[in-house]
Figure 1 (cartoon, helix red, strand yellow):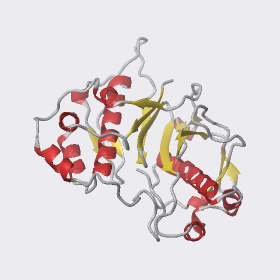
Figure 2: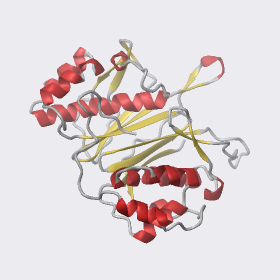
Figure 3: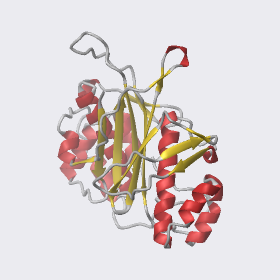
Figure 4: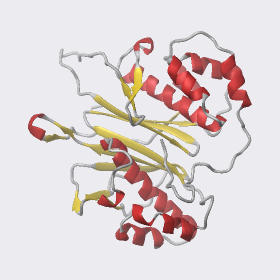
Length: 308
């Protein structure tokens, strides 16, 4: 079975004019128009990286030529591959389908994909709340976690460590929600995470964290956790698929692997030009504020942090 974990460092990407124009020519016209509507350059870069990560994956791992890839969005805004080509293996049989998911928050855009099962990915940057103190932030977020989870978060030590524990739990919950495609209507207190005893590191992927759903431990779900750097937690939820008769099926998973950090050249190595050159896309991007802005990754006083 196939498995993909890719990351792109948007925060330090300073695209040249030729790079940005090339990137815009390598995505669908409606994707390009949507990205142009972003107010901030940071958001435009993250969205562009996500489009290129996804198209590279479909092209290189699913074997669909770049020019034939057609991406659409569900009513909830989740990208999906429209009418994928049926690719047969050497034995003549159709291989298990791929599931893929994107997330971007903080300084990174990430893609996780798995063959033969459900997948969701979420990344969270460990940042101080922008509009309140840590205790006030936690008070606002009380209903998003169970009593047990709050006990783990608030016993982590310093405020910085408590925030790290908070974002770790949040990334896990978001990864599960994104894997099942439920959206904002899901009651997050239905899921409770029991963390692996080992600390997260950049070099090792943990799979020991367990999820309880409606107070019952879920044996069919596996969660991968790691750090992209000291401040960015990433969680990948891996779930089974349903076969005929609602029987759950979990393929054997390959060993856990860290996210591979790709360059802009990697993102466009297999690309084809889909649209004509449009210098206006650079003019629009150049006008967006590149100066550091107030952290918009964190919540407002009423809303939790959300990655995409």
